[in-house]
Length: 307
Length: 301
Image (tube, rainbow over all chains, first blue to last red; front, top):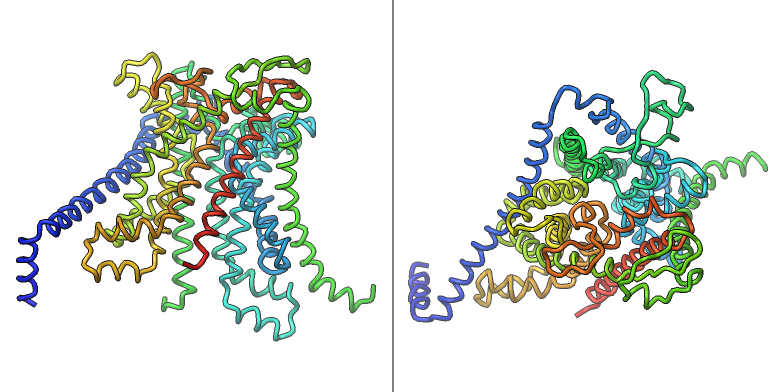
């Protein structure tokens, strides 16, 4: 071994090409470390800046439901995403099941695939325009949360469908065969065996979809609208000022940030935007980290390791 | 219906038809979106009799905001704005992304897997308005100070914001491509005495090229469709940019800011729909590109 190393050192001294290659290798390693470190630091600084901005802008009435607070917008965001999940989760999971279990291989499956890919690559402003046309103009209604929720569902459908499909495909063949051998029908197998077995990855996908929904803005510009007029004293769901009425206009946190770009006439607007950004960032981070933790836990659990 | 067949219906066909309907609905929805965009967007050419050539290559933009028509619908400035900001964003983001992708898979997988990859994947989901807002309050004033501009909103500001936005996408997809390079190629190269840099440069990168191109297209698609973050920092000036520091406008920002004020069915409104149709066609084009790339990869060597 020692002789080999010494021979290598001698060779290295004698051969300039080898020396150059080694120097280039070292330089490249340094550059790789530097560049990756720089960008990761930039992302960290970005997060820190947004969160620090939120803390700086903090005042006790920031969570209030007045014009300067983000209370109404926070509520609208959560409510809108909740409404959109009510639509996209059953639809997406069903479509994923159909694609994995029932769709005949051939033209129909490839059409479904193309549809999902097209949906997932649609710019969100285009989905927003479609929602504006179909849910607002064609129904002759005002901006409303429900239209916004439908637009967000269109954006999260492909994600939920794909995770369901992948989860079903990843199940061991034995689950399905065992159930069928016991005399269950295909649907009973899906409902009682396959769906419960794949609930983990599907949940992860749903959480991810919710996290993306929180940040959606362009699709809501012309569907959910940019105004909020609610009163927590009104508990009649059909009243236009009731918080829980889905057919009222509602500005979300992301649209509040967007509104601050030009309407920064009042000094408090930029504070509000800073705080809204920080809240938005924390929600999105919490959801995506939550999804990661859940999926890691599930892989460990189902991976057969001793817990 | 006999009780027997009703039981079978409940046990199998009810659920089966429900999920089948949902699957078909997805196809129908996509077709509907395409059809509506096409129906609305073609109005510029069929109802208001403008040529496609005028829309794509003329920079005369003064559509009439009613149904009489007779305005001009040249969207070349918006199209050029979209193309130039995306190209510049890609130019900035790609080297960084490739370095990070290689770093986390080949140079230091330990730091990469435990730290860089989760961080990058989490950043894919950060809302674009937050990027836009930080661009507006940090980057725009910085550019204004540094280059003594009248306004900081510019092509460069949009490109930087977009590049930070697409960096996580390109990085995580190309890291997958780099990771999936056949280990035998790499070991073979090391066996021949190559240094790590030589292996990366001459074996890993060429072998991962189709996957890296897919990552680039996904990043470009995201940048092209981004509306609000760009609209906040591009300056919304309807003129060709004279330099990378001058403001301009792009397709998505124009749609986002002008759609609300335009009368439904008017020439102005229709022209904006045509721009949305163009975005749709471009995103379809990106999908086709990715397919032709992955088709090439799957073919045996």
